[in-house]
Amino acid sequence: MDKLVFEQEVYTFQIDFAHHVSNIVYIQWMEIGRLKLLEYIGLPVEKLEEKNITPILIHTEIFYKKALYIDDLVKIEVWVSKLRNASAVLSFNFYNSKNELAATGTQTGLFINMTTKKPVRLGREEQEAFRKVLIEE
Image 1 (cartoon, helix red, strand yellow):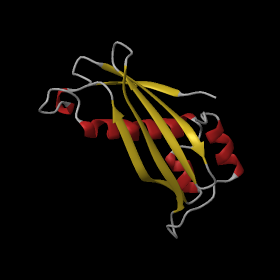
Image 2 (cartoon, helix red, strand yellow):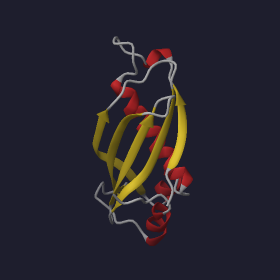
Image 3 (tube, helix red, strand yellow):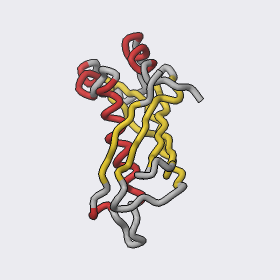
Image 4 (cartoon, rainbow, N blue to C red):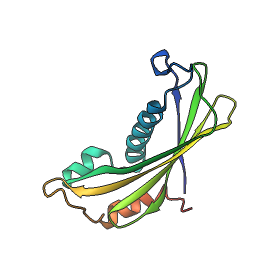
């Protein structure tokens, strides 16, 4: 199974008063990573919505190890670390330009029926798609 890897530049507006990347930016990068992962496995949001399914977040956790700065090109890894019938846990690693681990994080998502707003079990097709990036921990 594979991790999805992509890079993000750090922009001046992402820097906080302590002169490093603001904590909220990591959550924005996680959002980008989730969308990229869904596209990578062939289940972009639009395809899920055609099935009347949408993912929602129920938990986010980030552990900061090293600060990121304006001159960093951030490498981000994302993968599924737990896959259940109606939910998934995504894991993230953030690396600085020296390839040092700067932060780790997880997000738990729940799949819901867009009409009823109740949890919905993923079908066989969706389960198989997520297995492409499943690395259980």
